[in-house]
Length: 224
Image (cartoon, rainbow, N blue to C red; front, side, top):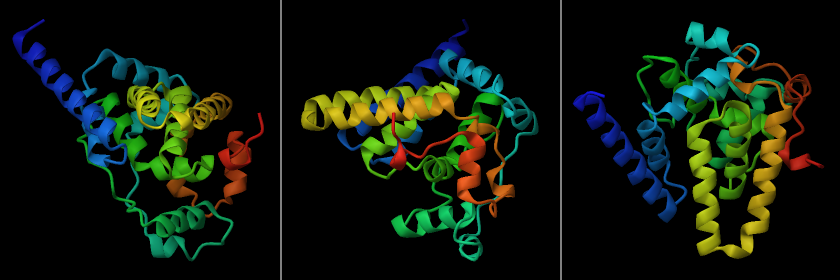
C-alpha cells in the first residue's frame, strides 16, 4: 500500500472517530453523522455495502444512471391530495421544521459516493414510508432498517453507538431501543428495496399504495 493511501485511510479514520465521539455526546448532531460516513468512504465495508445494494432488484439501474432528484418544492407538494406520498412528506417536514436540503453534499465519483448521496437525499422519505418517528430510538430503528436493506456501514456504527450510549446514560430505555432496532431490521428484511425507488417522480401516488407495493407495515402499526 502506498504512503498516500495509508495517509488517506488514517485521515478517514480520524474523521470517523471524531464524528463517533461527538455523537456519543449528542446524538442529534447532524454534522457528526456526516463526519462518520465521510470517514467511511474508502473502507472495504463501504465498498461491500455498495456492491450488496446493487444486487437488490432495480438498484443497479439507479447506480448506473446516478439518479439524483432536485430539491423538492414543499409548497407544491402540499397542494397534492392528502393521501399522497408528496403531501405526507411535505407535511412531515413542515410539522417538525425540517429542511429537505439538510444534508451534506458529496461529489459523486463512484458507487460509494452515489449511495451516500442518494440515501442522504431520501432519508426523510424513508422515515415517512416506514412510519418511523423522530426521536433518537426511532432513528436507530430506521438505521436497523437500512442495515437490513443495504448493509450501510454508517447505520451499523450508529446502532452500536446508540446501544452503548443507552447502556451508560439511559439504561431504563434499553428495552424500548432493542424493540425499535429489532422491528426496524425485520421491516427492512421483508420490504422491497427502497433504494431502487424514484420516489420524486411519483409524489402523487398514495402513501398506502407505496407501502403495499413495497411490502411495508409502518413502524407505528407494526405487529410482530
